[in-house]
Length: 500
Image 1: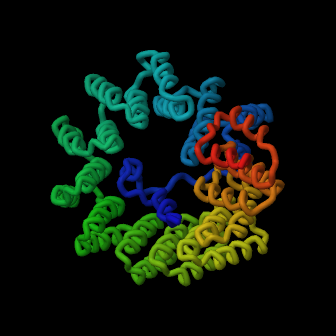
Image 2 (image 1 turned 120 degrees about the horizontal axis):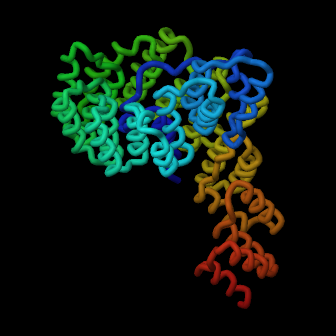
Image 3 (image 1 turned 135 degrees about the horizontal axis):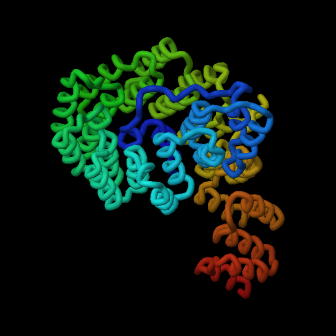
């Protein structure tokens, strides 16, 4: 069985080449507002995007509570940071509909961006066209460009950029957006020309501009020009070369096997880390790629000493790196430390250790660990049990595999987006059809239907067990037809075996 990549989890925090990462700022988002004098205290618990928060806002006013523009804009910002775009748009549009405050150019630009994220590009363009020329400010044009870039629409993005240049609306952010566009559409060779155009147009690049261009060189293995540009940035007295830029460069050196140059960048990155937990996460991940556990542990201690708190994000990074290096004993110690940390009990943290044990064939130990968490009153996500089920499939222990997959389906409410891996389900169903009775196979298939649609493998298992037990399959075949699942050669062969 192909190993379950804990690196998938890490990539969400440490994708060193995406445009999103390249534009990452080094400050933290605003502290969440939770006091009872703020409507956010009522909005925050409503995480389901299908729930309207308009009645909450209306009731807030009806109760005689005050609201102000700054307060609501802050709520919108928090919701955007939490990717609750639908709710953020509802607050923005509620503000507009009530006419309580004048809509600033920045607020209108944010609203257009939210329309794009929630309702799509057609609605963005309709929104833009519905506004008066006076309202089509530089910020709004920039927001429209950002929507085009996000959708990777090259022609529309370039056309919008030209319009903005003609109107004198371009800024460093506009050029950065175009460089991100070329990065996202794999046209990396065009990025340096945009940086050159900025200079020709009298727009001074910022650290994000340089970082995007540095990345474009590194991604094309042009490490000579990458290094030259980094040296240029370092000479710019008005630009602070941040830890992210050094992290990007170090990553490319590591990939190229240029360890000494990577270490120079990592030392510079560490000098910039100071009290930034994310910087230490980057460093720990890089040293894991270099196979240097001692430095990882030193940085882990520094992070603990220099940062206010190590969140689950930090534990996920460290555990993933230890698992990558095969040090499961140390990973268990860090996991024990996490359990005592007081952090939210997020099963993505222990899942990394479960994956580590599973990938090394120690699936029994992984199951023991998971069951001990259950005994402590914790409810795992289905992902946790699915890791164990997958490990037992790899060891051909199908009785345990089906048992753990049933456990996974049983806690599906803990992660409504969870879907079992098709290859694991296929293996379990194939075994069950040959080794379990009709009732158990039917029950298992019925439980799977609560998380995935009926498919060919589920029907195949039912047909197999029905034929094996001498039961008619006409109803199954009719159901297959209704679900547009075609009879294939294997199913035809099983059906034909009935008459032999």
